[in-house]
Figure 1 (cartoon, rainbow, N blue to C red):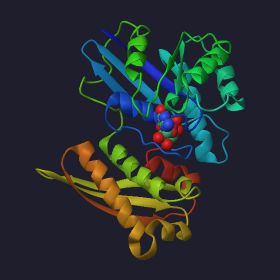
Figure 2 (figure 1 turned 90 degrees about the horizontal axis):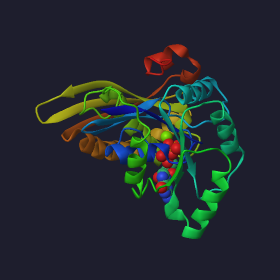
Figure 3 (figure 1 turned 120 degrees about the vertical axis):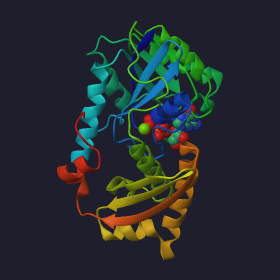
Length: 294
Ligand code: GDP
Ligand code: MG
């Protein structure tokens, strides 16, 4: 059997998590139009008879501004050296800039095969795409260049078949029916966090995390309690909204997606709690699952 680890690297917002979810066919990593949504290393597991590809979704590489930020960066670099293949994702609708040059310089330090994935091709004409391919092919000895649209699920099957050629002969790392390395509570908390992202403006999401406090599985349903943790009361107010309107909408949207994920009826309770400076407190980070390379 062929199996291996494939890391998704790229700047924030290029579509790494979107691609992962499309390939896996379920939401294992949350996505957002705001950068730095992915906080934790999430593995999405793609299974076929005799093939297992373990995709590692990393937080985007960026300049850190606080403890959580530098932790995220370390995770992104770590995953470059520890895999069989590297997928370098870029947003093909953007012009090539410093951020991508920085990553290419990092890639020069590894001897792993690197495949360039030009994402968001739904936004470009054929001619522009050809121009992009021409620019990128001279920047690094990419083994392959694969244009895709993660959002429209366009050409992702080609990406999989190309990838198979780079997988070593190995053993399965996970059960063939497993789709992620994360516990269910993690995925649930992430879905709620994604909804908070959708419904609040720029500054709110990064000062916030979500934790599943209780989960109870009934015969045909789940009862789930999720705490939304913020670092100051002013944010708590924003997340709750006037007369609870925002938290209500967060609950409605989350429940809908949780029912798709779990394929059962979901009763969801959410509440907001203030813990000042939770981001800088290792104790809380550990408690919330931000363990260093567990
Ligand atoms: P990440 O930070 O690299 O994980 O990026 P995300 O997967 O969270 O995606 C960032 C944003 O780009 C989201 O709003 C996605 O819907 C959007 N996006 C991702 N892939 C595509 C694509 O192929 N086409 C377009 N038009 N948008 C995309
Ligand atoms: Mg992401």
